[in-house]
Image (tube, rainbow, N blue to C red; front, side, top):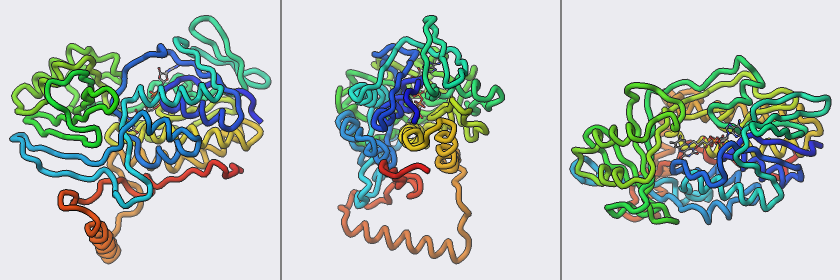
Length: 406
Ligand SMILES: Cc1cc2nc3c(=O)[nH]c(=O)nc-3n(C[C@H](O)[C@H](O)[C@H](O)COP(=O)(O)OP(=O)(O)OC[C@H]3O[C@@H](n4cnc5c(N)ncnc54)[C@H](O)[C@@H]3O)c2cc1C
């Protein structure tokens, strides 16, 4: 069995795989280039499949404590009329409601659980290279140090270096025609919507989505705009002053809380929306990539963090049950490729599965209407809107931690 794994990156995938590896009885060191108290990050929604994966490794309680459930989305017109409210998930579903929280609160909750379970974390430490040895790897660090391990897991995000060490011809994420700008306002000038509500104000030029952070009382918000001028793949490349000026132009004439909330923000960040739908080579015999290093869905898919967590749990199962890392990696790819590529396709608007035609489509519609009628019987008036949970194949995914990976 694999004895010790080095993970590059302590984001969502890195912390999740570290905890899962410890639950599998495998030693793990995580090297993270950022400081331990890094405060960046957008609001993240975790759909029921992410909560299922966390339950498999006993981390659901810690994440529930760090988050709030998301019950509904409300949309307001530019003149302040409420246009719609949609449930975030079917309240009758046993899968539970999605959870929402700040990115850094999620990664910190997972990191703390993993550290309690015995994972070692080294912050301010970038992995800069790797050498294959007779029975494992030696990773080179930017402080001149080295870490010896049986295998390297690259959980190093969209701009993954490990992906290119596995395959120098690996594709890079593409896109960047739209940009998500988000921020956090600790003392909002207007009362934000409660944590269980995502409120969207449609403005003259852009929408403004916001909700109150359950823990700090601050307002977490975002918008999505076409990219004008220089492109960037990384929020750190976008100057905060430029983003603030752009938001001021976009929201200045709107009769909504957008402009004043943005002006009081203590941080504004922007990411060009990228996609990485297919990576031909996922691993060598001692190295593999997971999370955004392996597949990137646009933020609107709200599944990137969920896929990163699922990857981490399934990879730890494979390393637990297959004696050689190479076999574990092959088993992981066989289990995961179809699903992660289908989720990215869904995020890009290319829903997988054959389109229904003719009689099949009519039958499907009738079944949906019947199911909706059943739900209506249990809902109050304001809730009489279709639930907005994603397709069952994406949301109902289940991981059985006791299952043996053969
Ligand atoms: C604006 C926005 C909104 C989003 N909203 C949602 C949402 O609602 N729901 C959802 O499920 N997903 C959402 N996502 C996607 C989600 O945030 C990502 O899919 C998820 O964070 C991927 O996790 P990761 O660990 O693979 O990568 P990351 O979270 O990017 O973590 C990678 C880590 O690796 C570190 N690192 C990089 N290189 C090295 C190195 N060489 N050595 C050591 N450390 C290194 C980085 O510092 C970083 O901490 C959103 C994304 C964005 C941009």
